[in-house]
Image (tube, rainbow, N blue to C red):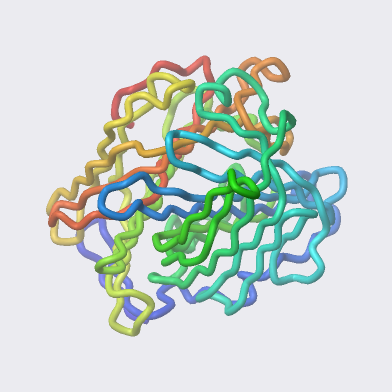
Length: 367
C-alpha cells in the first residue's frame, strides 16, 4: 500500500488500502462492561430490470438486542415492482461467527473481504412506502418470500475510522463499508400467484460495532454507489448534532477494484441534497458532489427508484415504519434506492440514506 496527498485529498493504492484485518468481517466478541455496546450489519441488493423495466431488491439490517447481546434482531425487506414492499422482522441466535442468523435469515461470510451469501426463507407483510410512513409495519397479513443471493466484492473495504482518523462515531467505534456485484434468486408468494426474479445487480454492506449513543445525533446523510461497468464505488457520509452543526464529512472513491493497482481517494468535501418530507422521501431527484484529487468538481445525479422508512428508537431498537408515538422526535431513517449517473456517463446503483429528527424538517437544502 502507498499513499499520496493531493491538496485536501489523500490517495491510497493497493488491494487492501486500509489494511483491514480479515477477522474483522466475522462477528465481534462481546466485550464485558462496555455500556451501550452493540454490533450491526446492513446489506442492500438491487437488480435493475432488463431493458429499462422495474427492478427488484432486498434490504437486511440486523443487530444485537441490548438486553441480550447474543440475540439478534433482523429487519428484512423485499423491494418488488410497482412500489411494493414485503416487510419482516425476526429474531434468533447466530450458530457461529460467520454472520448473524434468525429463524428466517442466514448471513454467511464465505471468504473474508471478498464474498458473502444471504439467505432468507420466511414471510412478510405486503405494504408500500406510504403505509410505512404512517406507523410500524410488519405484523399484518403475511405473504411468503425467499431469496438466495451471492455477493462478490468489486472494491476493497472502506474503513471509515481510518479515513476520518478518529476513534469513534456516535453510533460505533468500528465501521466498515463495501461494494459488490450480486447474483441469485428472489421469490414472492406461492403457487400460481407466486412471482420470481433472477437477480443480477449490485450490492452494498456495512458492519459496525462499539458503544452506541445517538442522543446527540441530529441526523446524517450516507451513500454507497456501485458502478458495475468499471467497478467504481463511491462512499460518503455527513452527520450533524442536534444543534445542526456538522460533526463529520467524508467520502471515499474506489477505482480499479481490489487489486494492487486499485486506488481510493479520501476527502472531506461531499455534499448531498437534503430531505423535505420523511413520508415521501422528497426531493427524489438528488445531487451528490465532492472534489477529486485533481481538484475537479465531481457531481453525481441520483434518481429515486424505491424506498422504505424505518425508525431508530433509543437505546438501540430499530422499527419497520415510522414510529413517532413511542418517541415523538425519534430519528427517522429514509433509505432510497437510487440510479446514479457519473460525470463520464456511467450508470450505477446504490443507496442514499437521509436520517432526520422530524423537528429538523423540512431541510431540502444541500448539506
